[in-house]
Image 1 (cartoon, rainbow, N blue to C red):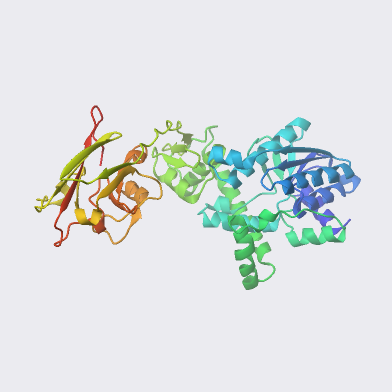
Image 2: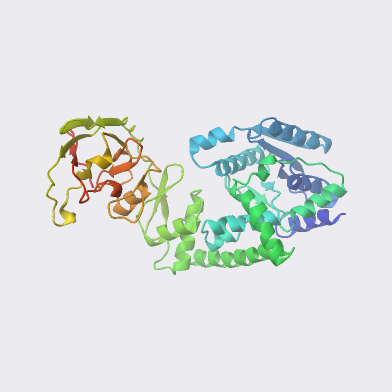
Length: 467
């Protein structure tokens, strides 16, 4: 047996905890890693062999190249005398619908596909081709996202499928490097397919692979990746201890605890409950839910969750469909005054040459009234609803900020934000946000000669906007 085949045999019997003869679904993309896994499993000695079923998912992301990958996997499955199940799913369309990102959607659909193939054949284990560098990349991805220690522990040799917990994912190549796998394929004169998207630096994992890891390897030497993997093994061992301690203190099926729990175990319980709901347990999300019971937290895809004092997590009902934003309205500042109905409010304006009287205390100023230097504003303003990405320089502030951040700091309810009016000048600059005074560049100064007053009043039968 070759070194790789021996390593596969030992990993399957050891950390993967598989007995010889256990059927396996093998996830094969056609790349070097999965082809090394497929051929290595097929070359195990008869007494250590596993019945194999090949599974390949075409994500429809690379046109003809994706279809050629599928044909390549089917061809090699037939040469090895193995059944091959292949499906084609438009992942980009699914990502647009779910709003969860391309990589996350692809991973979710892939796991559901593998679970379907396994269920169709009555197989309880799926073999994945993750290797040591995948572990190192995952470590830094999660580190940059602020992951908790259990997240930094990375992938285990065996773990439940996120799509179907009764199916176990096994990763017998976790101790191998991609160089080891390609070298073995080359010696065996076995081909593989190259995925051009693996070189796209806009994908965070690729940026870590091609930019960060080579620098760290030059600093720490060629054993750098294996050192990261060993560190992750230590974290996984300590994480397992926390799980055992948590199980001892939370015997109920719902994971409810006899409070108080130590902070480490309380965070751990939050992590476990988030994973059960299919949410990534980032450090910031875990900290929020563990320290602020009943305070909702919004997640990608329009979902929200909240926690109880006992650290159980429950999803909140989906938010109602948003009301379409009103179309922009342009006001021509002719004459001395005017008004216009804009969706839920009536906007009135007036221009005067006499300096207005302002409240001595700014806190007493009405949030529905704003004063401007009329010359700085110009002859027209456009009123519209706030849009994500809008920036505004508040009066007296050192610089501009995202309007969304201003809403967050002022605790403006999320449901109200899309209907907050803003005003822009002819060149598109935000000069006003409802609830704030005028923008800094449009303030009244000693040289101001004409004063513009803008006032918001509720339309008939519509309540006052909160500031």
